[in-house]
Length: 200
Image (cartoon, rainbow, N blue to C red):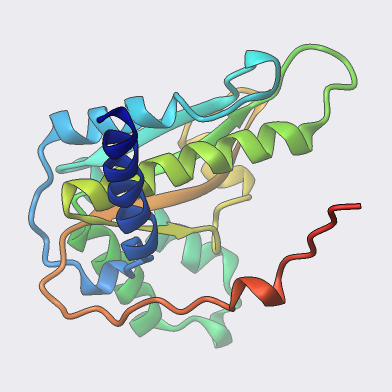
């Protein structure tokens, strides 16, 4: 009986992992995810593996009218960071609609450990694992996530806007939402192309 239960749990997890896919926010339909569910998936994120239990992840969530405040910031940032001859008003409008189509936007931030010489790569990996937990939990709940890391992600302006400390930095943002659009099945290389196996 116990073996059967483990098999069933493994099948459920495998289905969630293999059905998860990144869905761009332009495909979201604007439907609101309950805040309690978002808090639940962020709680799932905190159970990610972390070296020496440093738990470096920090989450900053925008939803409701705060999404417009975020959109206004990004519109302003686009204007001041782009040469006038390269400014694309249509692209800026898409950035705003991507935010406003989303139910929640979660900024994935890292807080550095105080111990000197502690490898930052390990902290970045821990935040990435937390992000994967969020995306898998979102799939299990029937909505989607998209990890964005372009534009203002690493800028001092965003650092100030998010009120991050000197020991913190942003690694990207997860757009969360529902979609009505049909989604193609994700593709992956065969395992044989990405694995080497030694027994002796």
